[in-house]
Length: 131
Image (cartoon, rainbow, N blue to C red):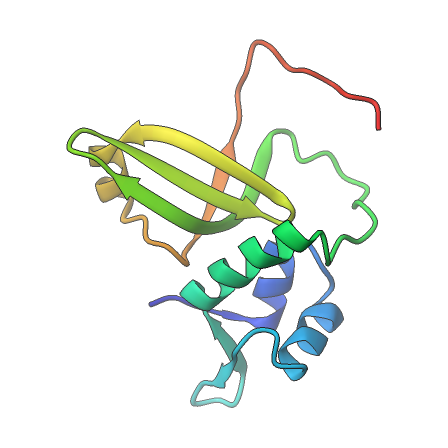
């Protein structure tokens, strides 16, 4: 199972490393130490926490001053495999992205819940809402 450092988890959750560290210190997400003493979060735990965090709306910080250009790095939070097709969910900070792809593609990529992945979006029809 893949594990993430506090800094990696912070990037995937869309928060500062200090915020991720405070959440770990408060017991909101379980950590363990590796042989060199770094605190790590298991991928499955981080996936579950990222979904919980997105649902609660907590952890939203000011948006960064960059254009993501349709790339959403995140963590695989769910996979549903069918005989031919598959559904993969990625939690990218507060954003949940769902992709339908072939089962073969999921297997070739070696996708598992808790691992890091990037959702890339290409669309000919983009809607913009003013908030």
